[in-house]
Length: 334
Image 1 (cartoon, helix red, strand yellow):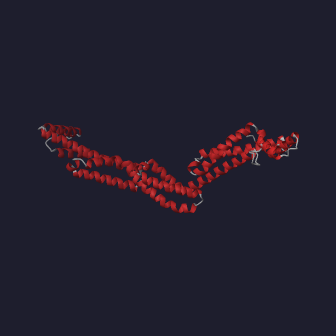
Image 2 (cartoon, helix red, strand yellow; image 1 turned 180 degrees about the vertical axis):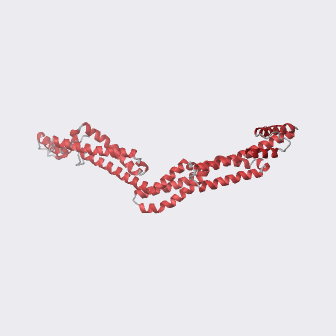
Image 3 (cartoon, one colour; image 1 turned 120 degrees about the vertical axis):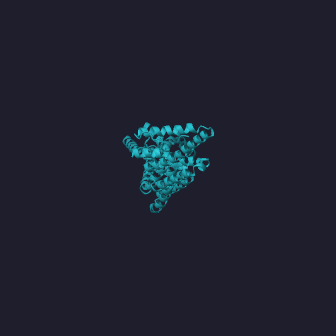
């Protein structure tokens, strides 16, 4: 119901029945004017009120836009949510005022002494205040928790949340609790706890580095452990295991030396390829023996080594054993 209609209804009940219609209309006009402030306001005053509301609204708009540009929701979700809620009311209210600036000094509501301009300015100031507080929270968080944030960024690159989901979530929970404490102004308590959390994060990073660079090879080693290759080439399998242990130890001790860690992973891959190659050679020789084609197999090997000795300028060394011929090739190369 229109506020003037409400006023009219109230007055019709309260005014004496002996008053004339003209006197009732005069009373209504007087009361409405006192509520809206229009009776005293000049056009200049109305324009000034509108311009002031417009100016404060523009400040609020600038502040509101900083929510996204500064990613403030990541640092103070609660205040950002409040600012968005206030803005959802403020923006359409100002748009109405912008279309009808002459309403600047009209009452914002029947039961409020604030004008439309007052309400726009009040809500604008609330948005500005909330955004400012969120920015302060961001400053505290980035200054005190920056090492923690940097560590989480590294963990994300190493897919730690996937590889070590439970540990990652527990540490992230602690991180969020520290952020809330900072928002509440408990900087000293947070600063004292940061080293402890950072230590736990680095421990996770070390494990995540190994998982990230070695997981595919670890799976292959599990496959080797359940194969005949281990029984036939136990010494080579031990070389594989030793290379894995060496790679893990190096990676945890040098968890940021990614290029060197990659080299360790490559050495492990080489050992795995080695045992697979030896096993393939074993199967080939076993097949040759089983099929009584040993001569053809041996002549093939002899031919390959002969090509090496000739290429090295050593001539025909086929009177020597395969091992002796290869030793001569190594000497020639060195």
